[in-house]
View 1 (tube, rainbow, N blue to C red):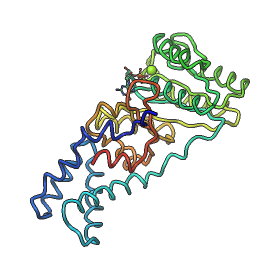
View 2 (tube, rainbow, N blue to C red; view 1 turned 90 degrees about the vertical axis):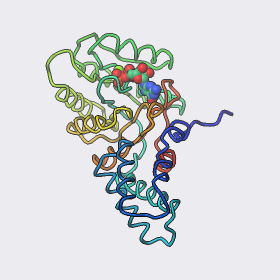
View 3 (cartoon, rainbow, N blue to C red; view 1 turned 60 degrees about the vertical axis):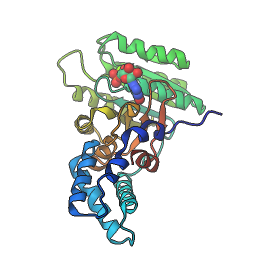
View 4 (spheres, rainbow, N blue to C red; view 1 turned 30 degrees about the vertical axis):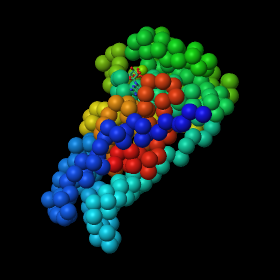
Length: 297
Ligand SMILES: Nc1nc2c(ncn2[C@@H]2O[C@H](COP(=O)(O)OP(=O)(O)O)[C@@H](O)[C@H]2O)c(=O)[nH]1
Ligand SMILES: [Mg+2]
């Protein structure tokens, strides 16, 4: 059997964060070294305030430990990173039936992630349905349609420029009638008209809340791990609509940094639930904090 791919394959060799931290040592751990380490963390897209918090935590652990060599320091940093992620909680997993609303700006990987999720649910024996509510351009519906066909899952679609809420409304009707387990809704990252994207998305949320027939509702934000600090702004914007249940970070395979996870966890208190590690439908892994941190360091 082929070994399951993990975040190690995607992140560790390229990130070299551990190597960069280790390179700072000259035998003694000074305040200057701590400052340099904070900087190294910031350079891997960890927000400034979070990097400081990580180093403060690491100092605390080291004070209480007998060992003070570079291995001990790296272990302390890891432990401190772990506690930051743990504070945001873990994504509890899905309960069924459920409706999943996928949000995120254009190009981050929403549609691809939906295909990956659908594949995952289908493989575990669930009945999956898709709603193509990115009506900004016809190509978006077509793209999801290709995945739906490939995965043999039903898809409800609208016409270009149609009110996305009406697509979701129809999809919810069909979802309830078919007694499906999961409905995953694709949304646009921008709009045809001048109407505010956030207004539109909050409307979609309300439609789901009112018409899901008692199914659990999850809103997940898809963010591109490669966009660095911009990822923060994206999460912030979408969080205004309703506190998201989780963040999915895509394109982990294309970044040597990976600090965006800490932005979601520390600044917004939202757990990261999945990582996208490629363009194929199998390229989605569950987020595991320990693996991830070991991958980074
Ligand atoms: N390398 C890589 N590419 C990805 C990943 N997720 C999505 N993509 C690519 O990113 C591009 C935009 O994806 P798409 O799903 O259309 O984004 P959307 O506009 O948010 O729906 C496509 O070329 C995808 O194949 C990922 O995890 N890794
Ligand atoms: Mg799309």
